[in-house]
Amino acid sequence: MLKIADTSAQDVAIETKPKSRQRMLVAAGFVGLLVLSWQAVPSLQRWAGSNVTVPKERLRLATVIRTDLVRDVSVQGRVVAAISPSLFAPAQGTITLKVDAGAVVTRGQTLAVLDSPELQNRLKQEQATLDELGVELDRQRIESKQKALDNSKNVDLTRVTLVAAERERRRAESGFNIKAISEIDYEKTKDDLETAKLAHNHAVEDASLDHERLAFELKTRELQLERQSFLVTDLLRQVDELDMKSPVNGIVGNLMVDQKAAVSRNAIVMAVVDLSAFEIEAQVPESYADDLGLGMPAEVLVGNQKYPAVLVSVSPEIIQNQVTTRIRFDGGMPTGLRQSQRLTTRILMEQKDDVLTLQRGQFLDSGGSRIAYVLDNDNVAHRRSIEVGARSLAAVEIVNGLNEGDIVVISSVDQFRGADTVLVTN
Image 1 (cartoon, rainbow, N blue to C red):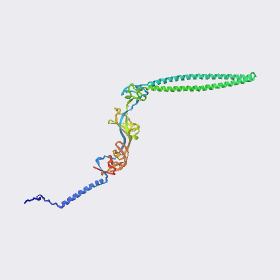
Image 2 (cartoon, rainbow, N blue to C red):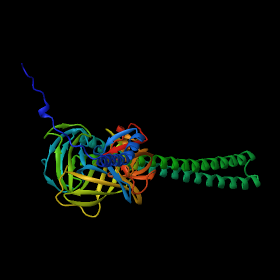
Image 3 (cartoon, one colour):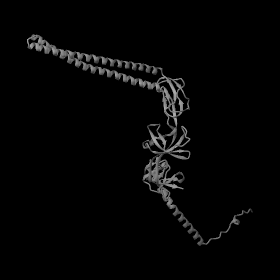
Image 4 (cartoon, helix red, strand yellow):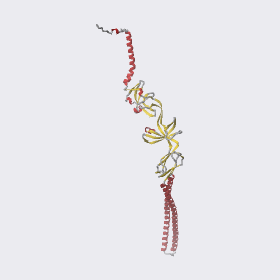
């Protein structure tokens, strides 16, 4: 008969533990559960009260501090010559260059000569007109003297006639009294006297009018001569400018025309660069245009050394959202500067002492500079309304909404989705 073995040989008898030990183990587990619950409750409460949870490593934090705030803007400037005049053709003609590009020149040195037959011919014509007017003026003076002499002679003759008529009237009056002449002859002498008086008076008045007329004509000739003299003087100046001379000491820049080329009036010929004084030409973003002002202090970084400077010009025109400015070294200019060299330039627009400041971050753009999230000791970020003031490259002034020592999220707050509270996890 087949016998099937059971598992009784594998069974092990378990020793029964005392009940008191079981109670201790249950009590210890209960206490541990209470401790874990006590530690987890605050975290659960924070989690339950927060709308959004964000890991801490995804955030940038900064502390609100009280310090001095310097409002500035840092840009890349380009070294340019403070004085770099350009030479323009004063007239139309053929140019002859006397120097090459890069040549060292001195003030007053002839750099180019312009041959302008039209201008030179016009000068000769106007000079001849000036000489003609000078001759006409001399002729007018002679005619005036001659006319004045004729008028004087006429006045003298009429005066002699007047004296003779007066004498004849007295003689006739004496003869009429003794009945030596008739009354008709006596009346005739009286008429002759009146005629002589009229002739003399008219001669005197004519002489006076002729004197005024001749003076007026002489003045007209003198004014014509003076005007022509001014015209000739201006043409002489233009002819002298055909010898184009350097206005400063320096070097010749790029030549804009070729040798013996025909140039038009006011065409640019070349530029002369004065390398004894440099300035910084910087492009400043349009957002700072209203805050820029002449005389503002600046700093130019050359190598590892900062040099003081001052803002001397601001262009009124905005090109490609930028404003062109000129910055001049104040006190001492560094050595070894080169034309078109790039240098970091910092313009100091405003300084505020002892104000609340916070490091700049993306929270200003994402929050519209009106909200910030402040982190408390329980790692919960609370939303606050803030008001900011002046801004520098690294910090921003806090006018209202934050206190000194507050820890603020300065990274973008877009991830908080406008929540009032945000749980920050480690």
